[in-house]
Amino acid sequence: MWRIVIAVVLLAHGIGHSLGLFPALSLAKTKQWTDHSWLLTDFIGESAARWFGVILWLAAMFGSIGAALGFYGIQEWWRSLAIASAIISLAGLALYRNAFPSLVNKIGAIAVDVIILVALLWARWPASDIVP
View 1: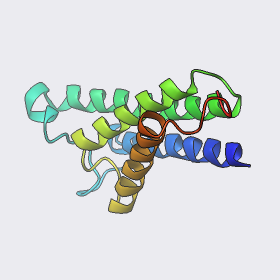
View 2: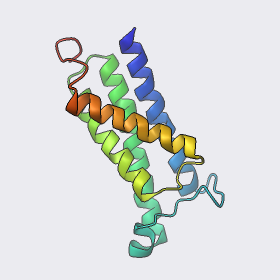
View 3: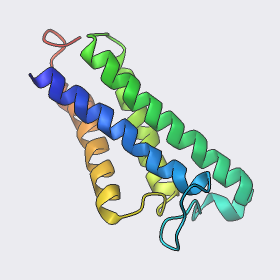
View 4: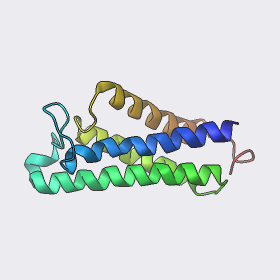
């Protein structure tokens, strides 16, 4: 049961990163929902910052989806992929503060990322003798 719940959370978290792609690919953009990076846009230019964001969101999305599939399929590499994806997701959220449409989306993504990092790096949960 827990394996299904955790896999679904990781999968939903991964799919949720597609929200960052909408403004970057001009599929949806509002005054509050943009692809602007407070740090990178002025430094490397609008186009380069936009494509860097696309790469970040795709990496976080496919990494989290891959971690979900690896976790459910009991693969040893799922932990490393989940940790890397959570770090990439946090970097994306820090650099592109308005990439997600609402504060609830941002808080939810940050919460899941922090839970992943705390669970896997600090608490060492779930135990590897239960789940590789």
